[in-house]
Every structure is written in C-alpha cells, then in structure tokens.
Picture 1 (tube, helix red, strand yellow):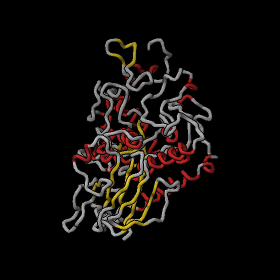
Picture 2: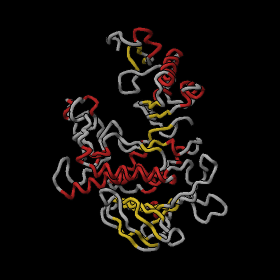
Picture 3: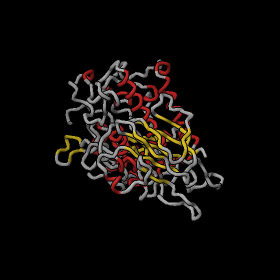
Picture 4: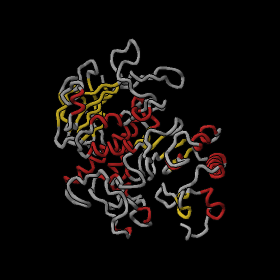
Amino acid sequence: NHLGPTLSFRGLDNAHYYRLVDDDPRHYMDYTGCGNSLNVRGPHTLQLIMDSLRYWVTDMHVDGFRFDLAATLARQFHEVDRLSAFFDLVQQDPVVSQVKLIAEPWDVGEGGYQVGNFPGLWTEWNGKYRDTVRDYWRGEPATLGEFASRFTGSSDLYEATGRRPSASINFVIAHDGFTLRDLVSYNEKHNEANGEDNRDGESHNRSWNCGVEGPTDDPEVLELRGRQSRNILATLVLSQGTPMLAHGDELGRTQQGNNNVYCQDSELSWMDWSMIEKDSDLLDFTRNVITLRRKHPVFRRRRFFEGGPIRARDQKRDIAWFTPAGEEMTPEDWDSGFGKSLAVYLNGEGIPEPDQRGERVVDDSFLLCFNAHHEALDFTLPDADYAAQWAVAIDTAIPSGLSDAVHDAGTQISVMGRSLLVLRRAA
C-alpha cells in the first residue's frame, strides 16, 4: 500500500504501471497473490512488456516463454479478455509471435480460470489434465469420460479455436505442489518447515499415500507407490498433446510432503543427483516410455481423433474404446460411476497428416489397457481384424516397463490392479 517503499516502477509512475483500487488508489489490485498487478491498459506498460520479450528473443536467444498467471495480462479492465491489447500485440509482433508461448491460464482473481480460452498462438498448461489424471489413478469414481478426453488431447478445450493437440501442455506435477513421489506418498501437505504452521500451500492435492502417510519400509506400500508413479509417467508421456515432466520426478525426488518450497534453500528443494544410482529403475522406465513416444507418431498426432475412418478405403476408425470384456464402450459404460478400467485402440494407419515430404504417415497400432481398479482384471483382446497378435510394449507392473510377452487376438490377459499395459500390434 501507500506505506511501502518507493521502488521499481512505483517510483517512475505508480498509477500507470500498476493496477490500483478504483475507489482507494492507495492500494493495489492483486490478481496474482503477490501484492500487485501490472496495468496492461497503460501503453508504456505494454511497450515495456513487448520490448522485454523481444530483447530476450533477439539478444538472449531464448526460444519461448512461459507466462506465470497469464490471465492477469488479459485484464485490461476487470474481466479476462481474450481480445485484449496484450494478445493483439503478441499476435502481430514479427519476433515474439514466432516463439513458444506457454500460458499458465489462470490467476487468483474472479473469473481467472481460463483453461482453453487463450488465442490461437498460445499453448496452455492444462490444469484439467492434471486434476483428471490424478483423480483417475487414485481411483476416484466417474472419471472415465473425462480421462478419455484428457488422454486424447482435450479436443473439447482446443479444437473449436483451431488449435492442435500440441496446444495442451499436459502435466501432473509442476514446480508448485507435490513432487511425483510425494503425490503417491502423502494425503496431506507437510509444510511445517516453512514457518507458517502448515497454513501455506494447496490443501486439496488429489493425492493418495497408498496406505501409509510419508516414509515407510512396508514393501507392499513401496511397490504400489512405484507402480502408481509409473502409471502417471506412462499416461503423461503417451497422451496426445505436449508432455511436461517436472525435474527429478524421473528419479523419485521428494520434498518430504512439502508442497510449497518457494522459501526453502535446503535439502527439501535441492536436486540430489545421487538418486540417479539409487532409483535407476524409475529412470530406466522413464527413458523407455519416452523412447516409445519418440519412435511412434501415433502418440504425437497433429490432429485430433475423428472417431471414424480417415480415408474412404480405410476399414477401421482412427480410435476405438473397449470395456475389459472386449466390447465397444456404450454411453452406459461411459456413465458408469464405478467404472475404473477401459482399453483404447490407436490406429497407426489412421494418422491424417502427411510427413514433411508429403508422404503418408503409417505407424504401428497400439492397444492401451488402463486398470485403476484395486484388483487385477481380465481384459479380452479385440478380434483379429485389429491384430492377430499383440506384443507388450510397456507394462507398468514391471519396474523397467519392458516385457517380451506376446498375446493372440481374442484371448484374455490379466492386467494387474492399478496398472497400465501398452500393447503393440505384432502381426
């Protein structure tokens, strides 16, 4: 407020650079949770922003920007406006418009949650993806339909505005909040070390500790936590869209349940590189599933699925959904409040866009069997029209994820409880 020191832009032109409370200009509007917000209605503020972005690209050679609490930059007045001057300036700038533009599409103000509402040039942190994947793998009911939408690129959020699946920055873990290991190890935050009596940080984390809060020597709990970590990593990497992996999650990094380490310069926030040797299994698994994505364009489609044949001569749809019994999903199956398991067929011959040489892209086809139920389930594989044989590409029930097992069409296979089995068409 007015008693604060005269620093930064306050000393240049306080009312121009900052948003002030209309009927009490001694105080600042706070849409960020940091105490003040830039006034993006002011021409000099906008010039400062654009000059800074352009400098970072042309002189410092950065290849993109992630805008924290980006909805704030669209508040010319009070509401978030996707036609705001800031977006127009970015769109027409010959330099800034050519680099990666990643929005954290929300702020703390009223109406600030804007996932799916940014303009065409922008990609977005998909908060709905994070919440849905967390809920699905911790066994929450009535998540199948939402999970399917998020896994296939969130067309409900991005297709209508002409954006591609890559506009969805898929993430489950970020620099804020729990690490992946803590997500499967704690039900509650443990921020006592921050000195605020555990009041700071998010309290609703959609986490599950697998039966024990925090550290444990119980081998069954540790095995389940490892499997849950692999489930989340595999889902993230194999989803349509752009995966974002938080540093250290491939090694099982922990913050001891602290989900708000911004104020910590200690072992809670440091990266322990010795974990490369301590948890090489998780690192190997992460490498293996990333390799699978890189090798197969069916996991990196540039268009959304259509749910039908791509070309007139095609016999199979580009995607199909099955129950564990091998029957195609019905509306009743999608609406089942207790359904936690399904299989999805990705047609490697149903990729609509050509490669850089204009040639048709043909990939292997895959069947992914998701089982978030706590018990093993038998999955019936589709008939031979889809594949005569299926080879295991990734099995999250195995620490490395790798297996040389092969299964015939139409047979039943057991998928471990709380696991994901990825099958590749072998014949």
